Image (cartoon, rainbow, N blue to C red; front, side):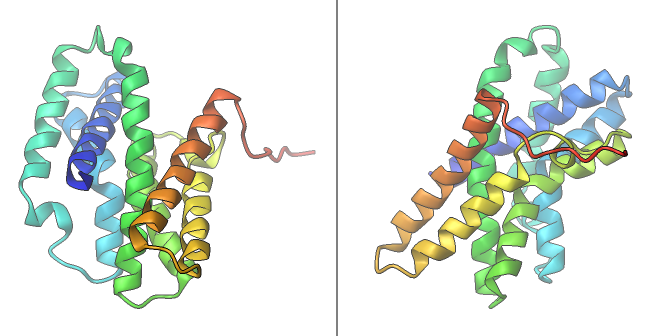
Length: 200
C-alpha cells in the first residue's frame, strides 16, 4: 500500500513540476529536469545527508520510468491538466504525509535525535518543491504562504509523542500521517497561513 502511495505521490510531484516548468516556458529537457527534481529531490537530499548511497531512486528504476511517463502525459495533455488539479493536490497531500514518516523512520534507523528525524521527514516531503522553485527562479512556496512544511513538522511531533504511548507502531504511523494530511487540507480550505513579516 505504501509503495503504491509513494508511486502516486511521485506522479503528482512530477506533474506539478511539469506545470511549473511549462509556465516558465522551458524546453522539453528543462521540463523533464524540473519534473525529476520535484519528484525525487527531497528523498535524494535525505539519503545523501544520512550517507545512504546509492540513493533510493537509483536502486529502483521504476521511479525513473514513472517520472518520465508522468512528464510525457502532462506535456501531451497540458491544455486539459487543470481538470486534474484537485486529484493531484490530494495525491500530493497524501504523498507529503507518507514521505514525512518515511524520512522520520530513516532518521530513527540511523539513530538520530528526534528533532533531526523530524527535520529529515520535512526535507523528504517538501524539498523537492523547494529545489523546483529555486531552479525556476521563484521564492519557494513553503517559505512564503502555504502551510506545507509546518504540516510535516506537526506530523513528526505527533509521531514521537504517540511513540511514548504503548500502542502499535502501525497505529502511530497512521495517526501521524493523518495529522499531516488533515493539517494541509484544512490550511488550504480555510486559507490558513503563517504570518508574513513586512519591512516597516
